[in-house]
Picture: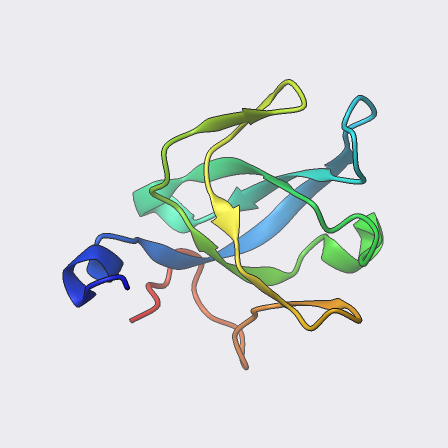
Length: 109
């Protein structure tokens, strides 16, 4: 089990998707998302395996909860600087989004 101290190390914030690009050489359908987290964090690129569930048009402009302080990882030749948060019930995927518009970079507590 994770301790509360381990969980508190995660920096989870609201970001706005400003650009969505497909990654052709990926083994499964993934997107390269550029998200804006406001002036404190700035923009980050995140690779997400949600291309089978969302179109580029559905994602652009949306706010999504993301972990912004993960160690970068290269996925399909793209450096991913975080992780979007989504739930998967086996029948589909749902992004974790705020119930109302928030300022980009708002912290999830």
